[in-house]
Each structure stands twice: as structure tokens, then as C-alpha cells.
Length: 223
Image: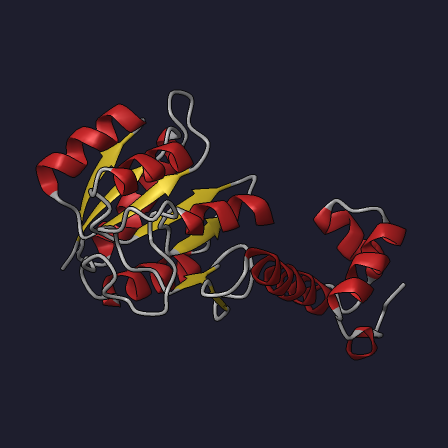
């Protein structure tokens, strides 16, 4: 099976992910900070990395950028966070992440994301993925070819977010799917969706209209 590097400053998260992935037959290495992650990535050349965003020394996005700019992003990276936002997820994909999982991570979503990550082709040569965004986001090339973002925990686990489009258009598509997911999950309740997404209800309604979200499909319990 695969060799997977888990990078997270929380001991409990590292232990849980290690147990799950080991049970699935994978080899697992653990790092609690960016320094350890750098060393392990260089030594073991993992097939996939699970990388926490919020770490005390160097955050995951910064480490992801570093790997991309130095040509070391030769493996799929799945970002993890308990405080994820749309902006954070979009930024992660700009710099080469292939998926974003929201904590607490369910077993099903973790295994699906890992399976999809390992099914991706190996590192792409610069410009090899014609029509797709540059994996590093800075035009340097040489990173892991990422045509789409699977937002496992943050949105529907089946959602594929195409990156080969203008940023504004991509963000609108991302946000539309995000709000449609929460509307469906809360049976159309604007009150509960406002609470879940942290938006004031009037602002939420304007946002949904702006994005073209069809509210008529979610009128059950829509108070």
C-alpha cells in the first residue's frame, strides 16, 4: 500500500489518523510541525500528505507554498482544518492542494479523499496538464498537477471544483455549491444556515440571490 505522511500539531489527531490509515494497510509517518514534515518528506518521499493548516510554527499553507516553489510538491496533499473557510480552501488549491477536509474528519470522508488522492497520476511535468491551473499558483510549474478540488469535509464529498477559470467566477461557483450544501443539510432553514455559516440572515439571503441559488428547492422548514 501507500506511504502517507500526517502533519498535525495535535497528538490526538495524529494518533487517530495513524490508526485508521494503518488499519487500511498503509505505512504512516507522523510529524507535529513543519520542521519535522520537511525532514520526513525529504527522507521518505511519501505517496500522499495529510497536512494541517493551523500549526504553531509554520502554517500548512506556507509549507505547501514552500514545497511548490522549490519543486518538492511531487505528491498529492490533502489539507485539514477545524476552522476552514472558503477563502482558505481556495488559497490552498491555488498552491497545489488537491482536497480540503474539515475537522472533525469522518472515517468515510478521510478514506474517500485518500483513495482519490492515491488514484491521481504521479507528479506532472511543467505544463503537462494542459488547460489546468499551475499547481504552485505562481507560474513556476514542476509541482503536482491538480485539475480540481475535492472538498471532502467542507462541502459535498462528490463536489469537484474546476480551477481553470477566472478567480471571481471560480469563487462564485465555490460559494454557490457551499450554500446549496448547507441549505440541503438544514432542510432549507435560513436561520440554521445563517448560524452554520456565520452570516447575518439578511446578508445571507442577499448572498444567495446574488449567487443564483434556487431557494424554491429548499422551502421545507425554511424559517
